[in-house]
Image (cartoon, rainbow, N blue to C red; front, side):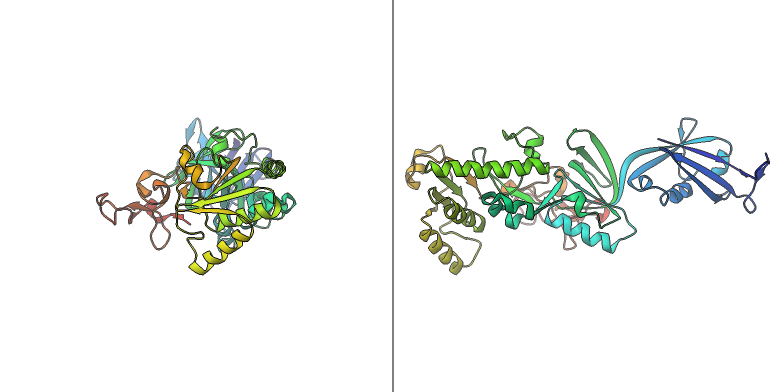
Length: 410
């Protein structure tokens, strides 16, 4: 909360007001130990004009909403300032605000921030992510096996935005997104607050739809940890917690290698194949098995790539079984794979959206992971779901633009 005193400016030694021009006066603003003297206000100047002047005086007037209060009454932006002469006003910082809000600090979110920062240098951009760091996913699997490489693919968000004066980072989880505001849960204290925005970019991405008894090394379990849905003792929202988890997984694999352990990988696309070959290379005593519901590995790639990948896995003595769904409770499943059980199961099969904070009307009802994907038009603007019948093939196609076209998804 800050204090604003509004009155006519006076000459030294004079008790009479000194007018600027015909009816000019000075507004003295005090907030958190700082004081500003704003001259040149006219009788027709309004509270809105005062707020515009304050934007250039302190960063908080850009990052927060501000209410101007007189005698316990919030003054509207259209209120003229001349009625406040001689009175004491209060400036109350309310909810956060941003010209552009970017939700998600992954690859897409970071690219959006960098592009927007240079394109809109006079606009205030706020990046929101539950993790305090950015992790380059392309080198993540190798970092598990050689933890010293992990520091090369990670950077704190706060460090990354230092060169961008109009960008701020908030470590928080988005719990609800609406047309002009977003509800956030702060990390780590869990306090809930709002942030208002003019435009928003949603870049939360997706994750593997792993089952409860599967480990997914691809993405930190930040949301599951916050909601208590994981047994992990590592808070992967923090840099230290994520590093400890990566190192502990390396130690677990090393101990299993000494015991000639068995590893099952569910999903034989490029990430699963890469993980299987890396495990055999760094831990030659591990018995690595990989399965997939499709009839070959690397199903998303050309047949020639699948032949090459299969040949490489055969040389690495990776046991492959295709056309088999993951059914750990079925004894016939393990008989088909050729092992009685797996010491560790890694999931690289199927994806699911991470958009639960979006209103249901803009999410698909079909698609991978039982739907929940954000519907957009060709301009990446978030749209309402087509109002057609669910049986129609166009039901999940974009309908009318949501939030007046000010919310985008990438």
